[in-house]
Length: 212
Image (cartoon, rainbow, N blue to C red):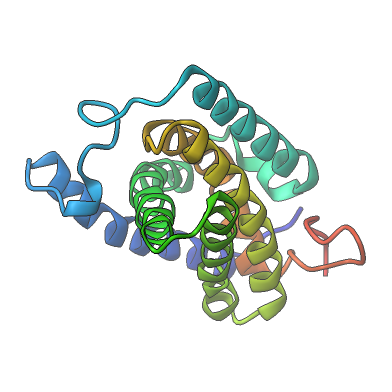
């Protein structure tokens, strides 16, 4: 599927900028001065998750990544390619998995729980906010249909990751690994698709990428 140079350049810039922003708090974590929400991730300290949570996290990662690779030509063409864009995507995936899971799962779900919300409310709240936040793609690309598609997709993923978080007794480790596998796999293809305009909502197959 053709990809013009302008779209590719924009995708590279987006990956570089997003990665740099997300890596800022992670750098503090590596330096031993983590912000509060990045403490006790479950790898070195904090709950490490349950066997069921780890199994479920890997299933979620495989199913979501495989579905995206199968249904998105640009992802399928680029998910194994060793390019500068792939390096940027994988690098950004490390930070995105840590920061986003710490915020959307730990901070939001724990806040809802502290306010008296049950498991269903915690999952729904986390997923809705997770999906809504990714609507920024519509603004960045100037294509609201892209934002809507990604909001639906990430909202669905948010439900699955929220369930894993609860099953894992609120350990971030399983959801961080699941999130990393997904993001590292589908980048940069999904970013190329967003910036090239080859992502739209054709009827029921809203998650497919098609030519304009």
